[in-house]
Length: 453
Image 1 (cartoon, one colour):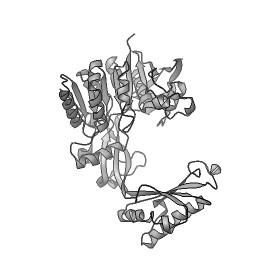
Image 2: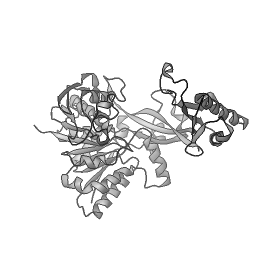
Image 3: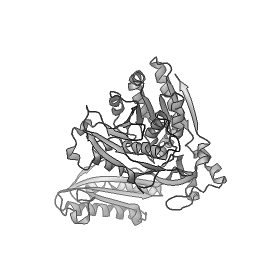
Image 4: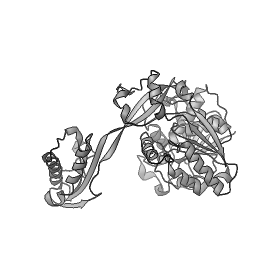
């Protein structure tokens, strides 16, 4: 029976850069590389405003420089959302690298249409409210503060790119699960109304979207994970009936069992019976897991439902400024001294003429059990790391706060043994705004283009 093997090569922007190269040592047909979180696109937008040819995940280019020859030799197809706000520019860079290496005939596809930033006024004028789907707040409240706004595209344009012969598919904000569901739908010619098989591919994508979280990373029974330093990233073996096996390289560390898979299935979970994606609604309550060998978990029985008439849109906007400082305080009564240090900062800031609301303050005492329930707190630790922060729409206030941390070394309580990071400086705060847009409006604007080296 035909099967395809799909590997995960990146779980987020900043993941281990050697992993996709190691995955090319395996027998795989596809490698999916996920770079985008909800706020990542706002970071890319700021980069693009400074440099029109920026706005994508540069780590992906490093992978191409190091691994393109092997990628071509082994005929492994790559699907990634590394394009961010500039898929076509990233594609141009890839083609240039291919030509510099003497590689001819490499097909690189771009998927665009998710970036709604140039269309905001058009959407509003057409009667789309863009109100916050969680709070009901009106979009007008943040309209002038928007840093990015992107629709979550599904697998369809990626399937179109694969049909056109692309070996590398560069997209912007496609869903994490589409990195897996698209090759499954393409290879097995899955009907777009076959909700069960599309849901199965979606579940597979969800299991591997965070990389090693399915193979022992971030696992609650971490002490049972062998060689975590060399943890193998997940590989999916998909079959035409929709079943699939979660596994990893036998040469690498880590572990795959029904518990590592189940823990990842719970990641970012809302209603388990209605996991909504652009391509279907998956019912996670129907998932059946069975260990069938060492580091092999069979996943089957998944049921799905028809997709909705809407696409989710993730917008980000500027919400003021923040700054955080940090001190290490040691010796007797360290916690009391740390508490006094924080109190001094707020009082001196007020003496300077700034009023500080309680919701603007942030104080954390690391080493005292700050992340634990109250009854587990440590009452008299020998040392404490005090983190003091502020957030405000007033940039001057935040900047002035940054000047009050260092003076504590000589004009605060004794025992300050560490002052790290220099004077805290104001940083822009970016907030998240989820909304919905009618599917047809977005899908009419999606474009798939092919470039050849």
